[in-house]
Amino acid sequence: DAEGGSLGLARDHASDVLATALAGYRTNTPAGTGSSRGQLVLPDSLKLLPLFVLSLRKGRMLGAAASAGRGGPSPTADERAYHLFHGRLAGPDRAVGSVHPSLFRVSDMRDRDGLWLAPPELGPRAGIRPAGGAPRGGRGGGPP
Image (cartoon, rainbow, N blue to C red):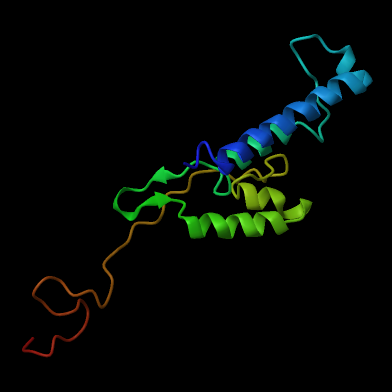
């Protein structure tokens, strides 16, 4: 059972390490001790750490296998092993990409980034054969 086995323990351990790190920040820094009891003000360098740990817990390395219909669980054992191997070897500069490839900086985006662009409409193409006929724009090999 993956939920009660080593994957579940690894997910719990990631959360425990995060909680310990944030509790240590609160007790050992002047910024942490000055905040109210229900709020913890983190520096910019730690603000994304909880998101990173949540992505790690839900990603292909440690996430629970979802049923993928007839194809079996997703990720498969081979896919998970691949992601665990590469995630373990990732340095700090590549760790975010190995945990969740869709995380990216939005603070330095250009004005046009993120706008929805409708794809151009496709017109008739040469070489597409209509049902029972010759290719459009070409010779069908028969009488005109």
